[in-house]
Amino acid sequence: MDMTGNTILITGGGSGIGKALAVEFHKLGNRVIVAGRRQAALDAVTAANPGMQSAVVDLQDPAALDAFAATVASEYPSLNALFNNAGVMKPENLLSPDESFAVAEATVATNLLAPMRLTKALLPVLLKQDRATILNVSSGLAFLPLAMTPTYSATKAAIHSYSQSLRYQLKGAGVEVLELAPPYVATELMGAGQLKDPRAMPLTEFIAQVMEILSTQPQATEILVKNVYPLRFAEEQGHDKYETFFATFNDAMTGH
Image (tube, rainbow, N blue to C red; front, side, top):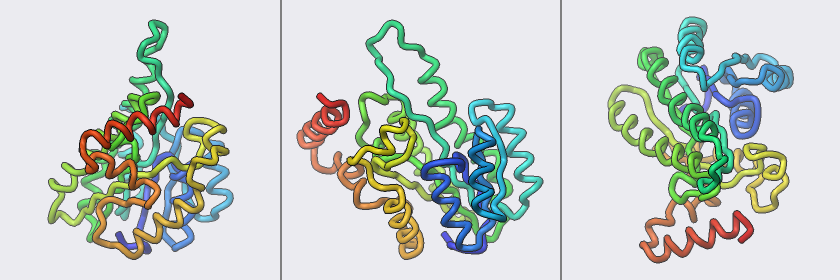
């Protein structure tokens, strides 16, 4: 994608990867709108970055999301970039009779249905532009799941598949589809513990590498930093090595 001259909507822009991307693209002179559930978090981002704009939306509410998309299309007719970044990630014990299915439903609604709905709603605006970009944030866990977060991993695998199909259908339409697959990054996606986990890639380092790839590899459709390679290409090592790595990885992440 072009790194300047864009009008970019970033969901989940109040914290973590979404916030960091918003700040970097804002520095480059792009018009950036951060969207999320928490007004206070969005206000903090825009206050620290004069000129950045914000919008509150509940991505789990289909009616609210449709209304939000209509407002965005009306207020930002020059919108030419949509970053579907917002996500939730929570552990689930599939063997527990007390485990609520609400976690799975909320995860699917936020991580999968919301990006699909928002993409469909805003595609007419994007198609009107001379050039446009849809960037879907998946995960290294789309390619090798973390068993303790089964629904999260499944939604990210679905986002990978959806992005491939969307890219194919938009071929020649002037809208490029990128997929950003992060490794384990030091954010608060799963709480404060992740932010301090020494195994997690520092957010500043991750974002710097992402911006470098976007700037220097215009033909790349998957944005992959080297830290995510072991997950992204695990299956290419063959069935036996994949199964061994899957077990080793999950044992390490769960402390077994």
